[in-house]
Figure 1 (cartoon, one colour):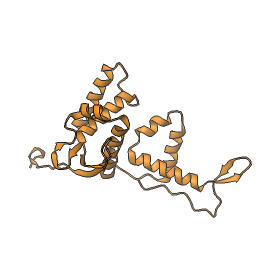
Figure 2 (cartoon, rainbow, N blue to C red; figure 1 turned 45 degrees about the vertical axis):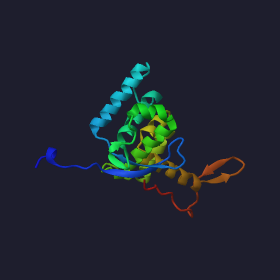
Figure 3 (cartoon, rainbow, N blue to C red; figure 1 turned 120 degrees about the vertical axis):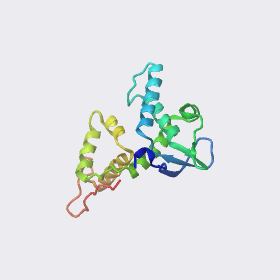
Length: 192
């Protein structure tokens, strides 16, 4: 038996997504993209950046949004006809009809689901979260944070929230804060 002879069905996940101008969330299916489709997304985003005379790299808003729009157009399927794309006008339709926030939301929803089913996803221990939080607090923190998978971003946010709630003011007049005393429960890393 050869790979090319196997009948493969795409793995999909149903999502109810909010769309601008639609009163209730819309049911769609989302699927994981192949590496070839992801490379086409990079080519689409690169062309958009070059046409606009901006750098074609992550962190440049025009490039990022074009990359996200391509992924959203390719990954979202019609829930009533799973073989058909939900965005039947492709990435151009996504860019024309949706704002940046909506495109980013749909892209992150797709990425989060992929993180959940990815065999490469691994849980982080508290030391890894502390090191990542230190990196994010550094001079290129926003870039480091944006390169993290959505599940890791959520894990960092939950870890920091739990850490902050465990800190008690040491001296109200100085505003200084210290870690809680020995009687306080230790801060645990979240399971993403």
